[in-house]
Length: 387
Image (cartoon, rainbow, N blue to C red; front, side, top):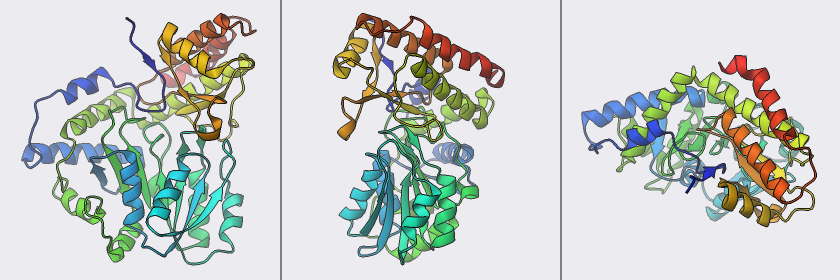
């Protein structure tokens, strides 16, 4: 039996070094040994966020961290803006509405990004906005929003906090939280961070802390002030995912071994271009433009004349290659090729080759090898950067 080749947008493959780190003997979270692990590891994550702020760790999925960002900064009856370009942008809408906020929804067509101009026009008639929420990398469509540009708009036109969901890209995409003016940046463990599900990360600006301190959230487990207080001691307020934090230390080792986080970002950019050029060579459509394409996931349109469910099932059953399908109204219309975290150009060449094998099985008209050749050209042209 062959192992499954997991090319999902999360969870993603786990490096052996990380698995071994997580298999260490358990320790107590109220010991000096844990304090040292916690402080060293969270300090090593700061460059991935592009921040000098402490990184808070929650034992949760990314969604809980998104909710923490919401409930700690805004109170019922206050007004917020949510920028949504897909299914996961709508998560923020649901969380905000559930907590009794007045939500102004800036919605773009799935497959489009939100531009500076879009946000400027949307914000102009609004007053008293407490926070603006946006998804950096929209997993359902493969869009990377220009959050650096959007942050400038928010801070130029409002006094609102700028809060960013980076769950499906932090660890594989550029992030300069402090420089760009992001007030809260959130991610999860199971995507580009190369860990199993169960750990969430938050970076919080000084500006956001002032708002949080005045907000008096009723949250208990998700109270960020509590996490800040305990982080000062090198601990968390409740029992953390100790094994995942051990694994996180190994993740940081792997990033260092690659040559630093900038090299990790370069690798993701190369893999993105390999996938996109391969699909273009195969005359298979892409949902997004090159300008706003995600470095961690590519949304690929159903090859003409194929039943997507049968095609994806065939790839998994016969070639052990597992992709994610479309969500919402894109179900059956796209599949999603994850290329984040523990994924390398050789993995892209393998996956494209197997896609070609499946296309031949379905009598899809193309010149065999054309997709692999296109991906290989991208890789070879970038190989000096990655070496």
